[in-house]
Length: 494
Ligand code: GLN
Image 1: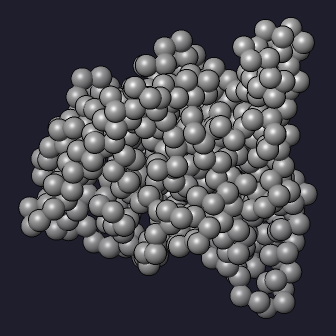
Image 2: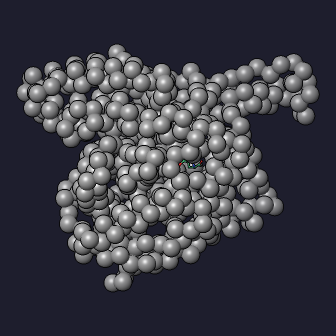
Image 3: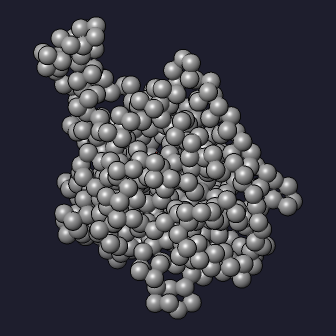
C-alpha cells in the first residue's frame, strides 16, 4: 500500500483500509528504517494519527474524500508545516517552529493527505548528496554506502524505502530530479511558477520550484495536480490552468517527436548510464515516437551560469538569518567583539550567529554570491550570467519551435549513478558537475522530470530525464508513463 499513491487513495476511499492503519504502517516503516537511513528529521507522530482519524471520520459521515485521502506524503524540511519545526537542514533553524503552512502543505491537507513529517536535506538546499545537512547525511536505501543524491535526499529516500508512497521536494538546479534518479523514484520539477513557493525556505528565488517524488508516474502526476495552481501569496506564481496530469499519463505517444541533445551525452557520462538511456530512447521509438537529434550548444555554460546566479540570489535571501528575525542567536564572546573592526556589538552578534549557524558550503556560497554582486564585479559576473541564461533558454526555444520542433527532450538525469558517501565532499567542483544535466532546464524555467531507467548491472538506479516546453507537463507525463509501462521489468523480462 505504501508503495503507491493511487492504490492507497482508492483503498482508503472504498473503506478497504482505514487511514489510521495507513498512518500506523507509515510510522512503523519509519521506525524500522530511519535509524539507518536518516531520511526524516522530524516525525509528526501525533499529528499524523490525528489527521488519519479525521479522514476516517469524514468517510464515516459520508462526506466526499479528497483525491489524496489517507496517502502519507513526506515534506522536505524546507517547507513550512504549521506548529512543526522547519530546519532547512541548518543549525540556524534548529529550533524554529513554523507558525503557518506553506501553500503546498495547505493544499495537501485539503486533499486529505497525511503528513507524517519532515525530511532531511542539504543545508538550505545547497548540495547534490545530502552531505551538507547539519543533521548528518541520508543513506541511499538501494545501497546504504551511497548517497541518495541531494538536496532533497531525505524525501527521495523516504519514498524509495517505502516509508511513504510520495514526498515533496524542491528543485533549484536538480534537487528533485537527481535524487529521484539515484534512488529509482519518479521526481518532477514543474514549470517555474506552476507551484507556489509561499512557505518554501528560499534558496534562489528565480529557480526554486516545489515538486513531487513518487513510486509511480501516475502517483507523481496526482500529487502535482493537487499542489499546482495560482497563489496570490507568491508573486511569481502563474495564472495558468492546471492541466489534468493524471489523464495525460494515458495519452498516446505515437507521433510525438523527442529530441536527443548530443551535448547531454558528453565526456564524463558513465558508459552504463549512457547505454541504458539510449536503450530507453530506442524503446520509445518502437512505441511510435520520432527521435530527432537536437543541439543545445550553450549547455556547457550552464554550470558556471547557475553557480553565479544561484549564489547571488542565495547571498541576498540568506541575509535574513541575522540572529534577530529568525532562529539562532549567538552572543559574541568578549574577545571577538573587541577585535571586531567597528566594535559594534550588533555586528559582532550578526557575525557570531552566522558563523555558528551556517555550514561550510552555505558560507562558501554566500561569499561567492556577495562577490559576484559586488560593485566592480557585477557586470563581469552577474550581468554576464543573466545574458548567458537567456542564451540557454533560447537553445530550448529553438529545439521546441516550429513544425520541425520536438515535443520533449530526453536525456540522462545525472552523469553517474549514486556515488559513495564521502566520494566528492573534498572537491566542491566535482560535486557541482553532478548538476550538469539538470541545470539547463532550471535556468530556462522548463518542466523536467526523472523517471527510473534500467538499473546498472550492479543494481544501481539510473534516471531518464524528460524536459518539456513551458507548461507542457502533459507531454512529459505521457512520455514518462509510456516508458514506465514499456520498461523491461526488474526480472529482466520485457
Ligand atoms: N545541486 C545543486 C546545488 O547545489 C542544486 C540544488 C537544488 O536544486 N536545490 O545548488
